[in-house]
Amino acid sequence: QVQLVESGGGLVQPGGSLRLSCAVSGSIFSIYRMGWYRQAPGKQRESVATITSGGSTNYADSVKGRFTISRDNAKNTMYLQMNSLKPEDTAVYYCNALSSDWRVWGQGTLVTVSS
Image 1 (cartoon, helix red, strand yellow):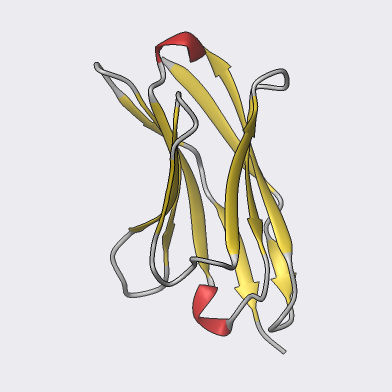
Image 2 (image 1 turned 90 degrees about the vertical axis):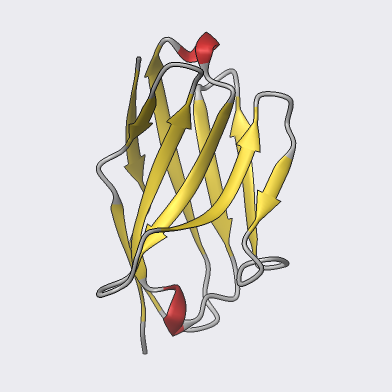
């Protein structure tokens, strides 16, 4: 398996930007897809963006054009660049890694968008 550690959350004003990071350690060779998910208070966890081992990306309609998922293989780190943030983006953001045998979640990082 792998271990995932998120960082980069915090308080930001509407229209601002944040970059989340997900550091990956362990059996990274077996990962075929990684992603960012979020869960707002009282709501179900939802997919925000995913990236495959081949580099293909997918975004939720609500974040298209504002968020960008990327990875740095040399640093074993995945990122989520979030621009033009809205109050409705407020949530705990989780990093996720998927292989053919397991699915691993990070501990989450809180993003609060408020003036």
